[in-house]
Image (cartoon, rainbow, N blue to C red; front, side, top):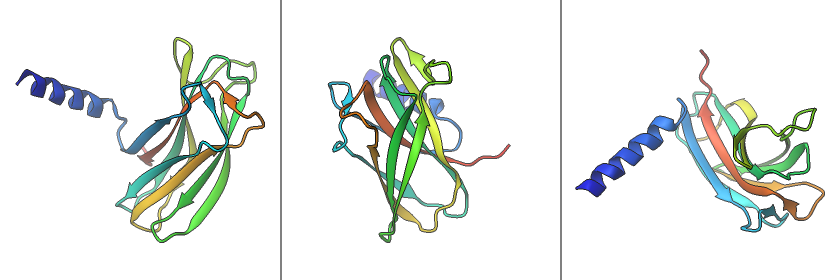
Length: 157
């Protein structure tokens, strides 16, 4: 009984921490060596049930102190439920002009979220597949820890 109550409390806490309008969030760890290899692509399956509203598509990037670049160059490939493939390049800003890390700090680990497609409209219902890979000059990309995909309803206030 106590385990069930604690489990329900944990679920309630997770749900209450999600921003309003959050439809999908998933993060995947990269190498345990705190690096990201070019061949180390991450795949995310995002279900779309409502095509009548706009969404904000974001990438999350977790990195550690020592990340040496101002940006993270990322390639995102989207495959629609019917198989239409679109590839886009994005630059996630990791450091400001003065070199300070951006995002939420937790000791020496940083979490950042970057809207890559604001007001995105989906044409089809179903599951969209997103493949995320880095396009940086260094191999491996050191101090990279996790990457993720986030989808929020584009709620205008």
